[in-house]
Image (cartoon, rainbow over all chains, first blue to last red; front, side, top):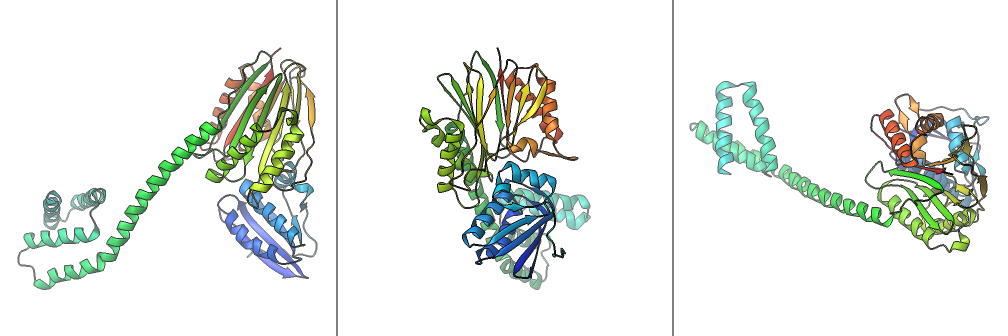
Length: 114
Length: 332
């Protein structure tokens, strides 16, 4: 299945909308799109997962790598619009305690996906 | 080659005479055979030219010359074909190396299920691909039975190498440091230091005291297991908190304890069990407890095998994740 990644910059923040399934096949693409953003100092990254139906362990690894890199560069990472299923995944893995996640949308951000 | 020549001539002659579908089909069969015999595209053109000369001796010189031209054009195709051939050989070589690696892994990770008066234990772990990213390990020491279940992120060979690392780290821990939170904290450090960024391992670790019948456990981001209360005939989630291994070196892991009564069961699994997908969606955890109810009259080993078979059937025999299921039941 295809993965769509859409990026918008506004107000010094980067909004990313991801749509599709994040698994061993699509994870490399997501890593390629997100890691360069995390390389920037003080990056403020908000990733919407509203249209992500499934994340497998490889996909979760992308978010862990992303989180570590952003912390190193003193930035911020926020995952928003998680489905209940995804929220449970972040809770079970203990990641919800270290990564800022939310089942709600981020205010002031107009989600579009091309 | 002579046989090929006369066969080709025969087939071509027949087609020129009949122009039939069947004669064309024979040409397809011929090409399949010549690929098996590693005959190159240029050689086929030579065959064609030779055959044509014999069938139509009065052919204009220009037509024959045009085949020399075509031959030159086909040279690069021939090279590409050779490359393809050598890649296929390499692939076979790699495949056999993976088979060897898989069998080495099997030996390295071999663990035997302890046979005890007090406990009935069943375990199964089935890889989706050749190399298993799931792992379980039993250690029977004194009056304790230790059980570890882990799932390495990613699949295939890198995951398998991590498994071996974990097993050796586990085996080298001294007995005094085998309480679950110690084990998880030690492994967390090993994994953090040795794994690439973005890789991680989930793990459940438990310790069953066969004299006091207490079960002490902790987990690092692992799929929750179940606890079956025999007296109430009910299940509860084996709730645990804890970050996956390999993310934060200084994480402290919590430890929990349950008093196990006769007939009670501890069910441990990998997320390959609950992330299993059918045409209607994911398999709910209630499906798993339902299956345990259905087969609870069997021995622990028979149960895990039956449950695997049913889940495999639900997914049309296509498991896309490694599958691990362990059941420990207090006998008396």
